[in-house]
Length: 72
Ligand code: SF4
Image (cartoon, rainbow, N blue to C red; front, side, top):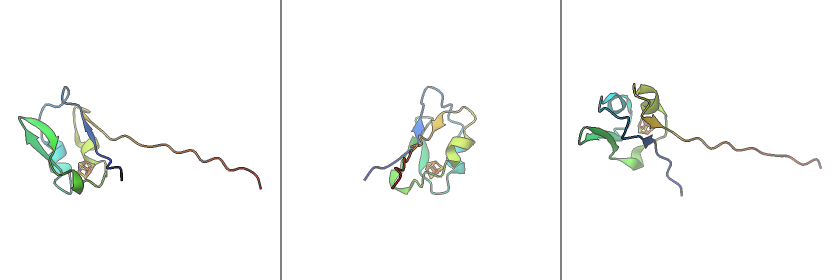
């Protein structure tokens, strides 16, 4: 099983905590004044933290899947 998690760019994170308050399942917390994933199993990959971050420090990768149908 692949566990998809948000990526936090620690170079951009200023520790505002906006992502923490936006997360509905308390996945994130501040560690050494930077956002960190502390409960990865609780992440629903909802994207709230990505939208909440004023620095653009959080990103969620998305898989684009292209299906090609062959004529029968
Ligand atoms: S994607 Fe949603 S559940 Fe996961 S850390 Fe961000 S706000 Fe929380």
